Image 1 (tube, one colour):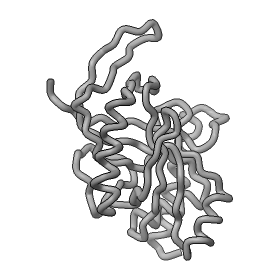
Image 2: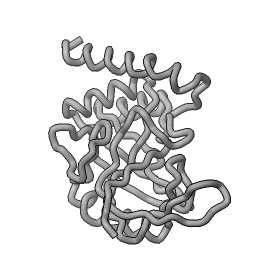
Image 3: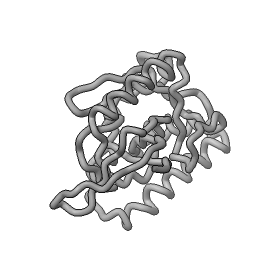
Image 4: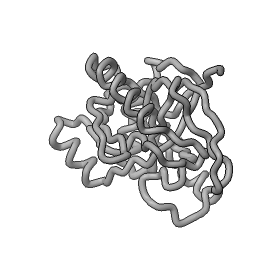
Length: 201
């Protein structure tokens, strides 16, 4: 069974008060906490991550990448199984389980992409977090429509911050308008912030 790039999104709940508190307590650095991935739950992509597989990969990730301070992620998920250092925006510094939720502590870096990520957080832009890995999936029979299960060959690569989550509820706060009506408002604001940073404003 061939391995493919598997990308999935999860809510990342951070309030503006938590952001301001983190910046004041960490000498201007932004450190945020939230849910990175969820086990044994069908997401909007119709995928289920078995707890055993996710626990194994999270354990390996913590023992190698996090321990060696190279649990880097990118701003917006690429179509690659390699983390591009030019686009690194954050580093996972801790992970732990709370029931079926894999929680993590994320340090936003002072890189160009990290500075953009920090400004997006500070501006209240709704962001999601995306797990990236290599693996195969298998269809499982369920009454609730098409469901695929991530197989034991799954390898976790990274967690990326994204602006367009596909999982239901994957934005930082509930949406009152349709996605179609939100697209320009969100994307245009992101573009405006990025342009301001590039102009040094």
